[in-house]
Length: 53
Image 1 (cartoon, one colour):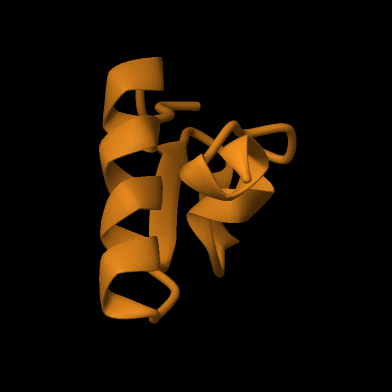
Image 2 (image 1 turned 180 degrees about the vertical axis):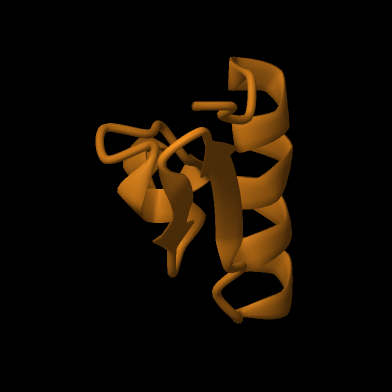
């Protein structure tokens, strides 16, 4: 399966937060397509500025 790298995941997460809209990620493999409805599902323990407050 082809997945986004860590840096790409971070950029996608920040973009989701900026636009307040989930980004659907499609990951391809030989067995088919795996759909993730929000990048937060790929970064469940992400760190953001809200943790600094």
